[in-house]
Amino acid sequence: MRAKTMEYFDQLIPKGMVLAKEAKEQGKPVVGYYCVFSPIELIEAAGAIPVGLCATKQEPIAEAEKILPRNLCPMVKSSFGFAISGKCPFFHFSDFVLAETTCDGKKKMYELLSEHKPMIVLDIPNSATLEDLNEHWLKQIYRAKEYFEKNLGTEISREKLREVIKVYNEERKLIMELVSLNKHHPTPITGTDLLKVLWGRSFQFNRQEFLDQVKALITELKEMVANGQFSCSPDSPRILVTGCPTGVGQEKVMGIIQECGGAVVLQESCSGIKGFVDLVDEAKDPFLALAEKYNKIPCACVSPNKGRLSLLSKLVEDFRVDGVVDITLQACHTYNIESYSVKEHLRKNHNIPLLQIETDYSESDTEQIKLRVEAFLEMLK
Amino acid sequence: MTWSIGIDVGSVSAKGVIFNGEKWDYIVIPTGWMPRQAGKEVLDQLLRKADIGLDNVGIIVGTGYGRVNLDFTHKTFSEIVCHARGAHYLFPQTQGIIDIGGQDSKAIAIDSEGKVKDFILNDKCAAGTGRFLQVMAQVLGYEVSELGERCGTTEPVEIGSMCAVFAESEIIGLLAQGVSQERIVAGVLLSIARRVGTMAAKLNLGPHVTFCGGVAQNQVLQHFLKEHTGWEMEAPEKPQLVGALGAAIIGYELCGGGK
Image 1 (tube, rainbow over the protein chains, first blue to last red):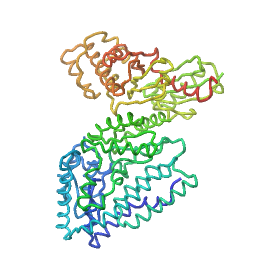
Image 2 (image 1 turned 180 degrees about the vertical axis):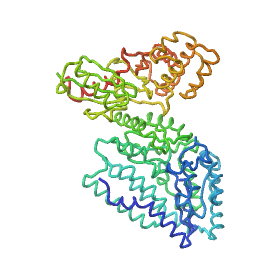
Image 3 (image 1 turned 45 degrees about the vertical axis):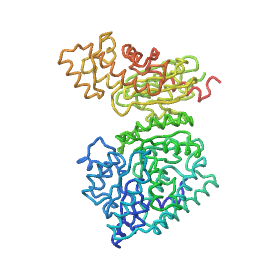
């Protein structure tokens, strides 16, 4: 059974395309971003609309490969292809892009993309143990602040930023409340629907409406649980998905897990809860608080990445996970190598098995993935 | 008496096993172009061979890549689980399985009851599969089945390419340099053993490992795998039947056989 409120979220991204256009026509600035490391509170505090940019479909990859190498992460290729082919309306309507130096593929791609759109690239250190990590990040936050103020002709005041941080924290709490409903067995909402809500969050132009709909969804799902209506059967193994981002348009692996009888309980990835689980400290100076929140995001591009292991430890216990599926996008070295550490960590500390799936955005490996997923689910039963 | 049937439709051959809890019999035919028909043919031949009617069969379990096309099966299971059960039945002490099939190769770790603990499959590429051997055999003008006898204990030549297409050109180059066919065959088998052995080492299977899939009949390959992994390697008499046998055993238990 599927919650009726989901219909709103089905339409969220297509509607967003129209709203982006309308916002521009009304003279409202729009700033695009790609990554969970982007401190988007700054964009909103500068009076602009932050919007996610397209990166998760196969379609524009051929266009990207005219310039980028074939043997590259599909997300990097897709982002670039969408942007240069004019097929991402959000990129088209963005005044500029807030980017960041995460993985090698992305930062080199941004060098090429900057010829198509003005952008500020945050200099993100790839070391989690850098001595002056907070100071480094704080400087980058101020750099972005100055860039926004100069280019948008506004001023980002502490008061305004505090206000935005508060609103975003409330949104994070609400989304985590929604995700927590899947602690129930059987789960009330499928992993692919949950993705639609979390991913859609970056493409909404009316925050209040979005928040109201998330609240309505929570209420509806609670009623479903009370009435014994669920999104999977009681014997479905509970699967946590982790690894590379898996956004809307790229539900292939999660779809196969669900089709083969598994329940995707939640995604730990940056397309899942990675950016929602920690709040920005409202008691601190807002610029410093942003620096501290965003430098702790446990992405594989950071070394060492112990935060991901402790987050996974908490999630597999809280959500009573039976097995973990780790999605590695082709040519993503950091997540590919880290898969071993995650597998060993889960085996030793939680006795939970991990299945690594290496894939891209094409459909060509569907049958191979199906075989692996079926065998994994049979193993868990 | 209750019988169960396991049918394993692979990319090269379709295998069937009929089982009654004590004894089992089998059929192997080429899959050809029609996996569904091959599966049906295996079923018909099995029934004739055992001289029983379909009403004596409690359950039919399908496995192998062609399992989705079989409309007469009651249940399907992945070849991973089936191989685990089949190998455990034949060699109860086995802790792991290496299976080299027509289009993939896999390593499976199992517990003392034959349950899958972990598994790994080769990536989407012919390297380390029966298909790789087939392509190389073709270049050399041999049948896959005779590769083992062809090289004997000759010193293998080093073949660096893992990709079937590149390895083919590499072999043509070696032939042009005058390297003997025997040494090339040995080199091909060694390269497969290294590739599959390294993949299996990720699961730390040993020391008792069952080697199955059609390619396991090749004694030289088995020897190289043993050497590369350091594990004891046992291959059943009919190594390509392990999946179908496992399917039949799972089926036998599902329909309450033996109880």
